Amino acid sequence: MSQGKILIVDDDPQIRRVMRTTLVVQGYEVADARSGEEAVEKFREGKYDLLLLDMNMSGMDGIATCREIRSTSDVAIVMLTVRDSEKDKVAALDAGADDYVTKPFSTPELLARVRAALRRLPTSPEGGPHVVRSGELEVDLQARRVRVRGNSIRLTPKEFELLRYLVSHPNVPVPHMKLLQAVWGPDYGEEVEYLRVFINQLRKKIEADPSNPQFLVTEPWVGYRFVMSSDDK
Image (cartoon, rainbow, N blue to C red; front, top):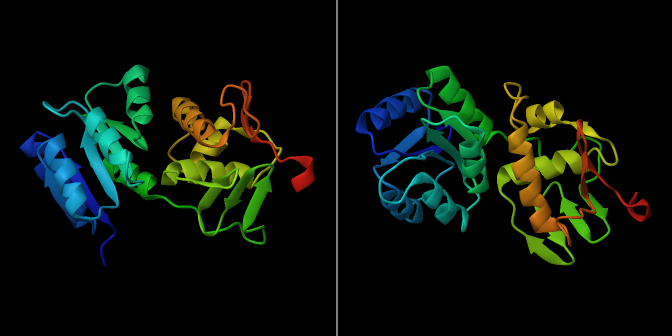
């Protein structure tokens, strides 16, 4: 049984070949594309669970490709790049990537990033509510649906997992490391920039005023807290 369908997008044929071999051995179904344009075309023709996307391609680069695909899909996306600055990481995450890996990378690291991107928490917290409401926000944990002021909001899988973990622990400051390990996995903990980008994206989608959040508040030097209104407890 396939572990998932992956599209590798890289203009280096040797890298595509190595990644394809590595992933096929692990039970993934793999296709590849040589450019951003080809990736968008292949993505429209078929369904994929994950894109491994090179950031620095000629023509339509990884950032533009990521934005194009993310505008219509919540597929998991891992960006690949030779650059390792925080600015580049934030650019990749801002474009809609779920994760980021720097070349050259080892086989165990690549596989760990793939597993983290495809990671899903259990359908609903055991013994907890299936639907969480706070003011004009409603999060259906089982159906993975979010509504704000009566309107359905589309979240990427990682955005939903992050929101879900926070709403499942209302009014409690959740440390950065705990959030990262809960949503991305045990190999994470130092990637605070991931949380900054994803929290900002969530605020833009669910807050009436993202600069003055009502639901997702920052706990300085600690992490983040979901505010459950007293009327909805």
